[in-house]
Length: 493
Ligand code: QV4
Ligand code: CA
Image 1 (tube, protein in one colour):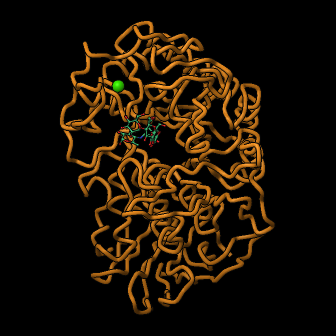
Image 2 (image 1 turned 30 degrees about the vertical axis):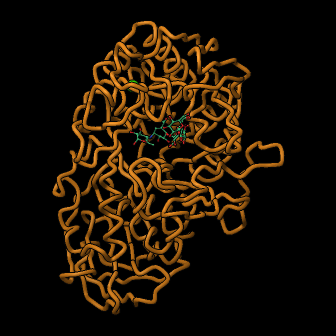
């Protein structure tokens, strides 16, 4: 479950948060395939609660009503079309699976696919699940059945996360329904899963469930391939539940990564300490994690909370993302957001619920593509920013090499090579960088893929000359649009 099942030479996924399936299919063909991405994390595809107060928040999709594939992103047929078209471009689809719970308690109605649900009697006929299928006072000991104390493991896993009705995954019937859903997705051709709220599920239950998963669809994958699984466990080191409990069933989301890297690129923690970034900072083994700067929760103060860099601080965000993509640690995910107006009230964003860009009928807006490759219609599309997509390609070129030729100025200027294939240098100082550095690269002229693109053998940005001894002169003024330079052997001019 640890292998992402990427097509050869591809090593990064992007989370196209709240995109429609039809737009993702087009994006695979027009951008993700050609630009070297491995795959896409998609929003939960299963039927969810329709929340109207507030009006259609993004988080309604984390309140399942059934496992039918009908949401604002599209229906079953559109989902299948996306998976097929993306796989044909060598782009994999990873599904966000919400199996810890169904809707919040209380309320009733019809889901996005028309199924009835009742959060008072715990009835979800679209699956079907009934009150027998949920944890209750016999398994959860808090008086309101909600989680209050994250130091109590039993409570975190058997009680309700923010009142979300907690499925009894210890029951064979419940497991069977979840396994049917996952195998249904596997047969369509998905490459793997994000397990939402994994901290709130027992590792033994996940072990039993993953043990019943089919191999991937052989129309797209070698026979016997297992789905890639990455589990959402927010482990900042201060709770009894640890990431390591989940390595038996796949990788884990490493939230420490963005939380500790962001302050460095905000000049709040010297960059020189990144010399032993990764396991050296007490993080798990590289092969047990997926890494990212921000995610859909913490970019709006949910989950592990704020303090991570996001698209709103774009210059620093690009540098942190470039560092992530240049560094060998972890399997990398690039966030791709939509815009919303923040409105801070007492330190919290009162608009943290706002859903994706919509039309008048609340259907999700198409992603519009501008001639300069950027997105319109309210979609941010960080994955289409030059400094980011060129580093996705950098990672593909240098993959498998080790980090060598580390250099720092003792403070906020750093540089390193990836074997003899790539080199990157950052200037986070308030003074210019003007230094001769060992790049480890063969002599020649290289395109700086941060300031420009490598197109048909020439460079639209600045170039770097590597001497026969592997050294090169670097000049990075503090005023540079992006105070960093990256070169690799795939972009030699
Ligand atoms: C509220 C109160 C409750 C109250 C209830 C009464 O908070 O105390 O009992 O009303 O009805 C939404 C609302 C939330 C509401 C809840 C139930 O925001 O206020 O409860 O619905 O109606 C997302 C959002 C949540 C949202 C949820 C379901 O972040 O705000 O809750 O979707 O719509 C921990 C977990 C981690 C989790 C993280 C957010 O360990 O697993 O919190 N992260 C994942 C997802 C995240 C998602 C969920 C889990 C739940 O990444 O996006 O929560 O599926 O750290
Ligand atoms: Ca649970």
